[in-house]
Image (cartoon, rainbow, N blue to C red; front, side):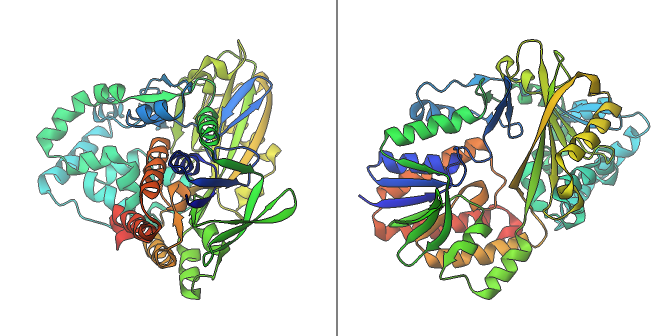
Length: 474
């Protein structure tokens, strides 16, 4: 039996821990917050439930696994066609569907967009620009890129111009544009008319009582298998030579010895905890290249039966400081009292910028004014609000992130006794389903390997991450 220390009790940490505990190993999960779940948590107040932003379980691969691991967890199918993007005064389906976008586009813009798109298709020269702006424009043309205000959305998300964001983000998150770039003209036309049916058929699931039910169910199964979750336990140092984790819990400093440390916290935070420390050059490059974006969640309680015309709406243009709103009652009637509804408004910021300095009242007043101008909020129906601020919400795929990630993961591979996984641990814009499946899969492989094989698994994990997208691999 081996001993494992896990940093972070989000979906990745709980999943890898559950696999190891079921394999008969001694596993302790250290979580600095008072509850499990990481970013997949919920906030409850006065009968309302707000998730930490909208979270969905995409695809059907994770469902059988969760069914086996978490008996009793309720997951209900939800509509995939209830999300929209708002720009040019109109709502467009999201994920983008060629037919919907082209049919609902302003007539004056359509000829230029079609001509550029046709020209890109006929020329066959898609290019391989380093930035996401170059990647999109080379593939589908400047007119379409400008029409959907994609640059505005990217700058809201990351706080940087799209010319400074790697194409890797586009490859990962703009899959509809990848299809437009790579398909031939006839294939593109054929796909356009069936895209809506494919989107609607894609399975999406959600726990009707709130997204935190998934992490809570995983934690329950983890503890039933013999694992232990230590809440309010914040890591202070990771000694990779023993290895061991020193942490604070209830004001007391404690040490947890292990045969392998598995980290799901931000990889930059992990690098700062490790002793011996990374070489100065690695620390400097990673600190400059690997940054995370924080999010402020404005939870508005409303004395109204409904608020927004759609479940989830993305805003690309600068008239709205926020990038997304969600009406949770449209996900499940259990998330708001009868006859009432709510809005979750997401604003991203970097620590130290102007938005990070706004008071909670300042966040609400500015946002409420913008929502009212968009006819999405009647200020007279507001019953109250809360603001929740979350650091390390989004890894920033800046142009230099690949070099920083390569240096840091390369050094960690040499350490050997620390495995960094998950959305935060691999600087990866991951889905919940992938977090569960990849975490559990890593735990199963570790449980089956002798200790002599762990270093190889660590190296393979980092190599797979670096090979995932061209920028990081380079």
